[in-house]
Length: 90
View: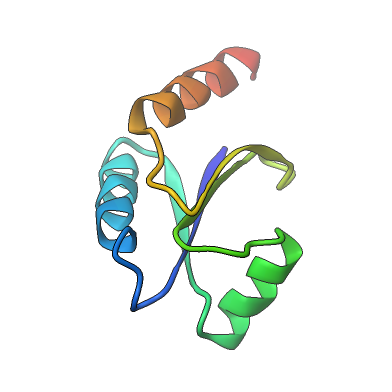
């Protein structure tokens, strides 16, 4: 399981979402950050149909979407529960 965060500079909800993602990294959850104003970030955002920031997408090891928060700050506890569930299913 990993987290994909799509963000941009002028987004008021992006800084608190980044902080949540940084705390998830400290808990051993892999996080990938994509600035949608960069070419690579834009391409990845197009793949996941990201239309607003912040967008946080939880994917499994095969990059299948498990859960997402689009245009809103994610629920850290729900992400941790998904991690625990993915460990149990392994």
